[in-house]
Length: 316
Image 1: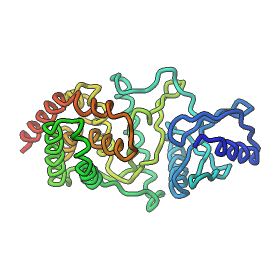
Image 2: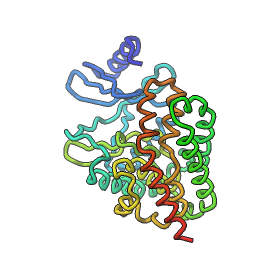
Image 3: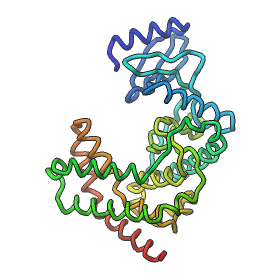
């Protein structure tokens, strides 16, 4: 992507549909910022296949129709542009705020959780209309597969990380999964909704007027809202210094303070396994960053995990 052939094909495709492109800039992956000669700015995003594109087109349309306007519109007036097996579609450009969204600030964490809650509420209303078009989500299965992959690359990881640390992470992962399986019913009591599936900070975008938006629905799935909240909690833990009490200050997370499956899940080292698996799969060079993630906060993570284990013990 980004080569001259792609750019030439894209510009000619746009011209065929009455749009004159001025320039194109890669944002990340298969997402591009497109500026037209009339100064209009659009996003061009690549989708894996037609099914994925149609699913997201329909969902964003239905969300908007049901009053959830905190996301973009995917344009359907112009057919998608096909290149190298991917389908590229034009998406509304959201003018970003001068302050980038991140999890370091408490206000951002509150706004992010509030937006997720609104998204789940709106998604529940459109679930029936999307029935059969959205894959189902299984957190336990996903994490079992992640642990299995991590185990298969252990010989390589052990070049960089001590056996003691790796053994601890693996032990907590097994303990976490066993507890989640045993208490799975406590999460499945919730009604299904559509979950976002990737609540990383870069998928929250603040508009220039201060409104927070949710973007990039590639991992959307039918599941319990708890799974988005669990991932959000995992993502903000470094920003709250692995302080369990800090999590329960947010109403959206507090509802799970006595939910054993959710508590067990908090101790699973999902980011560690994810980043090592990705590094090896993509033959990445950022080993130092992943090593730092694995080792730097190890003690704080262990204190947090033991605190969560004590909380679970007090529930019985």
